[in-house]
Image 1: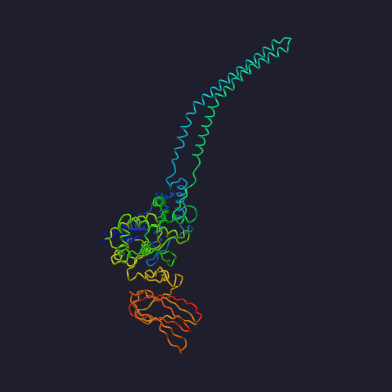
Image 2: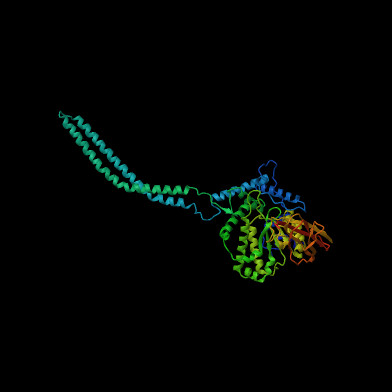
Length: 573
């Protein structure tokens, strides 16, 4: 027996026991790690010498884990799970450091576009540049040689001019005018020869020079483009842009807590989740109509718990309907459609959460196992396992509490055996109740006006809404209880009444204040069985001062919960 218990704990704790019957968002991996760590505890690394001041790698994570474990063990066994704060200011100093480290990794990944795969390789630009430069080298060398040769010719001709001028000055005769003319002719002749060569040189070198300049400009442009950094990519997850505002801290804390504040593991999980969301097409899925309206009876959101968390109900007994089961699981295509619908439903629910620090960013899951299909339903088991894997890998820390109701006896026995292997924090996050305790358990977390009629409350379509407060009274065993609604003016009085589980007698009458008036029977006193209409709604038009009296007689040996609420409308007559 001990070996079986250890095996159950190692394979996933509480949630693994019912994974074949329930499609829920769970913290399975975290429960697995906690259960395993309770069996074999690992000591944190200890510095070799007292002089060592720098913390070894992983010491910060070890310190956070030790603090979290210590805090978990301080929680009393009867206490309820206290959700971790989403305010950065409330974190431990070491937790803040780890959050900052994760943010740096995310910022670096955004700058390098690591969350997407559409960026071209950066090595392509230098290769093209090298290829472009090589052909221009020989042309540039040839042009420079020609320029140097022409320059030497010009210098030589200038020297000839100067020599002739000097000779002319030495042999000046009396005819000064003739000497000047000779000098001018010489200069003009030399100048014209130089000017005739100059255009020719310019004409020959101009195309080659232009080609060289164009090539250099093209290379420079390519080099400038390769050096311009791309702007950081914009990535959103659960409708929240990463690092755009403080809501991103709440998202990153979920990934850190899902990986016990191990930065690298949390960052890897984040990258994998973003990649999966892109491949799965989450943004497009949100707008799709999958044509599975019947599944609204299986999974639906209704009301809030006493702390303000939205509540999701999973009613798997609906799959006893053979037609619904066939439409959902009869072939692979339908199973994949069911999986996409389940992800779509969860994603739409998450988009309604408040990811601001201190806001409500988690939900409560209520899993009704009454009449749920057994392990023989292979198709449901396959779809459930696949859904569980996706949910636990890509939706970390989105559940504040997991409540299992109408749980069969065998599950209660297994839960009792594996309970010692789980930490108090994990056990407080899971709530298990058998059929006789299901309604009582739900009332611990949900008020009657928020709890659907199906599960023992008064929430339904009709005269009253979730804003109409409900009064709850405990009926003692073998005792009679009365409720009075006084009225001093003409009005229409309407009320709803319910005894959870019934098996009691109920009656209602109007008692006038005047002794001369007669008592009016509104509801004849009779016994209501547990199988009858769960909620009784009555109304009575009051024409004179008096009171409406409800009488409930509990003949059983068990306590009962009485729920009622009323409203009045004034009448003109």
